[in-house]
Figure 1 (spheres, rainbow, N blue to C red):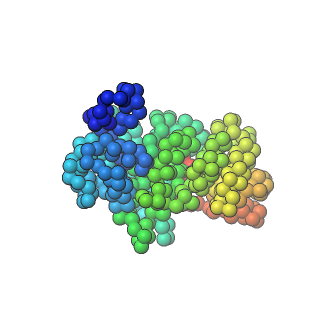
Figure 2: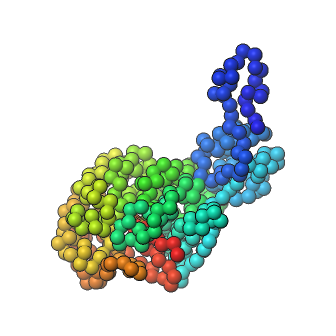
Figure 3: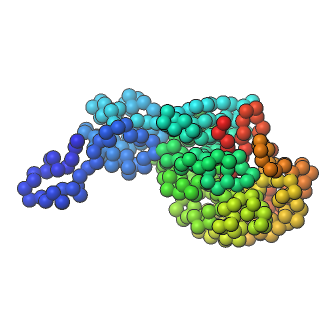
Length: 385
Ligand code: SF4
C-alpha cells in the first residue's frame, strides 16, 4: 500500500490534511486499463512504484496506437513497473464468443462479459464492409428496455448497460481483426466509421457512451474523428442537444413514422417524446453544431400498410424540410413471431421517389440476409443468438 502519508513527516500535519493528498492504492484485483480515460490512467499509475509522470502517456500509446494486449511488449517501461502492472492490471477487450464472416465480407462478433457468472451477458457487434472502408456497428447495452415493436433486440429484456471499457473493447476487437494496428499517420485504417446502432439505446447509457467516445476520439490514442462516429437514438429528446454540445458526433434518429399514433405503436418511447419534441431537439442539435453539423440521418423501416403510404412519404418531406436530413429507407427484415410484413419493392420505390423529389437525399439499404445471421443497419438490428 503506497500512501503519501507514509513519506511525509507527521509533525505539523493533521490526519485530515494528509487524507486529501493520498494517492490511490493499487487495486487488489486486476483492474482493466481499457475504458480508463488518460486522466484516470495517470491517476492509477501514480500508485505504481517506479512509474514516472510520463509513464501513463507511454502506456496510453501502447494500448491505443499500437494495440498491445501484452504488457511485456511495452519495451521502454521499466521491468519493475511492468511486473506491477501485470500483477494489478489487465488489458481486457471482452471474451470473443463468435467471430464469423459472411460471403460478402460482413463480419459478426459475439462478445461476452464475465460469462461464467453471467452466461447471457453477450452482445453483438458487426463490421460492415464498403468499397474503400468498413463501418463498425457497436452495441451500448445488453438487451434493450424500449421494446420497439419492429425490432428483434426489443424482445430481449435489458440486462444492463455496457461500461466504457466494453464499448471501447468492441472497437479494439474489430480493429485488430482488420489489422489496423499500429496506427500511424501514413497508413489508412480500414475501420473508418463507427455507428452506435447495435443493441440498446445509447442515450440511456449516456455516461459510459460519452466516456467511450472521449477515449475513441482522443488525439494521442485512437484518434477517430468525431464526424466519423454516429450515435443513433430512438428519440431521447432531452439528451439530443448534448450530442452536439458535449460530444460533437453525428446523429441518427430511429424515426420510422410521420404520425404520433403510428409511432406510438412502433416506437413506444414516442409516448414520452413525441415526433415534434424529437424534431425540435434535432433543430437544437443542428444550431449548436453550426457549420460543422452533418446531415442528420433519419432511419425509416418500411412496414407494409403501417407506415409506407405515399401520403406518409409526403408528410416525411414536410416534417424534415427545416432540418438538414438524409433518409435511410430500410426494407424490414422479418424475424420469427413478429407482427409485420416487409413493404413491396414497388411501394418502397414510390416512397423513395417522393422523398428524393422533396430534395432530401435518400438511401435504400438492402440488408445482407445471411445464413444464421441477423444483420441489419438500423438501430436495434442485432440479435444475440
Ligand atoms: S430499436 Fe433500438 S431502442 Fe428500440 S428496442 Fe431496438 S435496440 Fe431498443
